[in-house]
Length: 334
Length: 305
Image 1 (cartoon, each protein chain N blue to C red):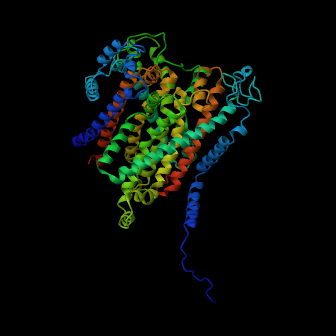
Image 2 (cartoon, chains in turn green, purple):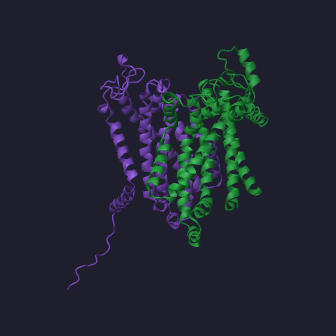
């Protein structure tokens, strides 16, 4: 197991270096003078230009600059935002819990609905359930999710007025963030209605973000279950007289779950991409919206740092999923 | 009674006849899947709409009718039958914009898929054929591209290159390429050790001929399936970029860009938001239906239902 971990890390490190090189080159690839771009000042006297150039380290050879950058990254210095003048890592940590909370609710929704749907479709293969569920799944991942979000806003926020349109909690409530997770903080604050408000703000964004993973998980569960259900050991279990519930729910499901877990892991990475659109529509203050805003505001320092951070997070998540998968399926450890 | 069934000597089957037979067999499997046939029909209709857009559309997609701003669809109160699906915030006919938008979406799909297919195949062939350090470097590069969420990478690339449809398409093609590289490489590595390849090599075939004429034709099935997947992803991603303002720029009637312009009016004018998104949904759905059917038809081993 340890060797497995080491081997995975060995692949990860050159990838991370490659990602950092890309993030580093990003500013230098932009049209225009990097010093101007990073400092945000357009017109500078030559002396000021030289001073800032020296501050930012641009007068040193490019290789030294890269290692300085890498060194900074290792100690947690991802640069300073041009717009807010605050350290990028701090900004990231203040916004990250919002995205995590949203993604977490979305993946729970996707798993809770997707796996049973896939199972039912597999068991009742060819029936109206099967075709209907798979048809819905197909529509689910053919949909542009930004459109889906807008539709839900029109229906639930506009016409029915069941859910709010944007933000994480009603503006009536104000409390100091403890964990950064609105659901936990609102419970801890003890204010009446805070938790309900947080929950209702989470509802629509989670549904929108969960749609594609739900569809993919349902399809994957169905095909995995179909393969497993035709295996000999399932036939043996049935012949032994075990109840269908035991056969399907315990014997078949456990083995069918293996490819499904890989899919779930992949979807977590996909969610970070989907979060960009969901957060933009619902004005959800997470890292997706942060990146889009930074692109618009030409805050190149944030784009550079954010890119590296997000890629690092995805790589870590994939590593954890790989390890979990290795735990469940001993065959791939070797 | 004389035996009238004389066995004819085996005639060499012409390659044209063989191709026809393969096509017939393919169509047999493909048409079993009703969804796939439906997808094909819808797709063909879309192509027709896109090609004959200037003949079908009632108005120009750029013509602003300032007196008829934000008109609801014709069947609703206040609607006007000459603007069947209503008008947008600056008075342009939505139906005409949707029809011309089909041109954009299909063009985007074809361009992006071709770019990433060709690029991915070439890189994958090189990686799978030559192996060694070339292979390692290429695969590490692909891992790096895959380490980023595709939309984010496309967004950043467009930030570098400047927001436009062309740059958006190039960015999306880059994010889709690793899938083709991986597929081609895996297929090449599997085929390379086969006897027919060794035989060709012994007969004196050079690496280029081996790669493109000998090995590649046998790897087409998964590539075709991946290509349909990329086609639909390209349309969705381009619409997403357009929605974020980093793809096709207004006043282009691209479906995603139309949604961006409509965003502030969603609670007042539902038709400006609903119809472009519906167009995207139907197009992508048709392509995905076809893709499912293609996958089942091209490799019966993969048939799941």
